[in-house]
Amino acid sequence: MLRKKEDLFFLSVMIVTFMIGFDTTGLGVAIPDIAVRLGFGIKEGTWLSISYTAGFAAFLLPAGIITDKTGYRLTLLSSLSVFVLSSVYSTYCETLTEFTTIRLIQGISAAFLNTSAMALLNVLYPVGGPRNRAGAFKKWSMFLGLSFALGPILGSLIVSYLSWGWIMLINIPLSLVVLFPFVGSTAMETLKKGALGQVSLTSTLPATIILLFITMNPYFNQTFSGLGRHLFYTIIIACLIALGSLHLFSSKSFTRLPELKNGNFLISLLLPIFFSISYWSLFVTLPGYIMVKFNYSPMIVMTSMLCLSIPLTLIPVFTLQDKLKLNAMSGFVFIALGLLALAYLFNTNVKHQGLLLDITLFIMGCGAAILNPIMARVVMDNVAPENSGLAAAITSTLRQMGFAVGVAFYSLMTDSSISNGLNISESHAFIASSILPLIALSICIYLNKRSQLLSKAH
Image 1 (cartoon, rainbow, N blue to C red):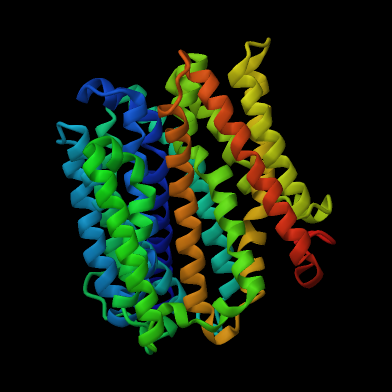
Image 2: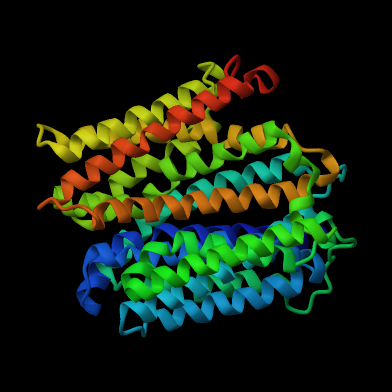
């Protein structure tokens, strides 16, 4: 009976993972419909995705600390309530500002939902326990990839046959399934505080504000004009001063993590950021771009985005990475070449452009499937085991920040363009972002002596 209950909790974690991933990518294909309904452009509509990812990225570290202090149960139930309520409320929004604000709140609740779900997974599969911990996290990773793959697909089906609002309302029945194992249950809770529990929540607030304001900076400048820009720099400087002061005078500051004094660890933190900017952010920005450039229907866009995401599942299932001896170099090269090919396709009209687009996205997906597990391992190679929880939280925060910065970057390139067509600005954005995988490859070459990233497949 206990085993059955634990399996239901594991199912809850998987569904939470799907909800977070789906709300990240599923709304992207609906932005044109939402823009028509609320009366704004597709470019402005990207802020619905940016605000969600910005809130998620900025609040991961505080969410991790609160979860570690209060336990996963209370955090999961309360954050799930906010997540669902904000989803429902978003279907009633009448302005872009209102919708953007609600999406920001939903992103913040998703950060708490994510950390509490991961805490539950950690309790279900403890280190050295009888259950297969490695297998559980592998399933979680593959399910995360599937959520990104299914997001555009289900989003397109919902837009085509129902209404975009159901992309948000689908969270209601899913949340009921998540809650089911908790009803009348006195399930196990976190027995002791991890590394995050020893860190002061106050020390993370300046970093949270900095991350939030940086990722939302173009939106603030657009909304509040000159006054907003001066206020932006004032707040950033004040937070930097506060962050430095907490580091100097508080022994519980998260910046006191010993690994932050390790040069290899600091350099390795750039890898997940670059990876998120050049790959994960495309799940939000690319559907709208494809619709405008190629005049595709949501269903065709769905198929193209599937080419970008399906290798995340195919490569691990068929162990192609090991069989073909693929390493980090091949992964970064695939993504860089894919971005350059996208720049070419968006800047010219060629025959069979739909087929070429799908091939390009599939190649990028293969590169991402190679890099996804490597990105997690290369950072943790430079972390002491007793500090792995806090280091993982910092890594996750930076990875999500890269996701949000990538979405903001593509939007900023488009908004700042003085050209008459979208294709020129998009092409420039893809060319610029193709440099990041090459920089990441240089970092891997530097770290290769210790991590062996380029000498064998992982």
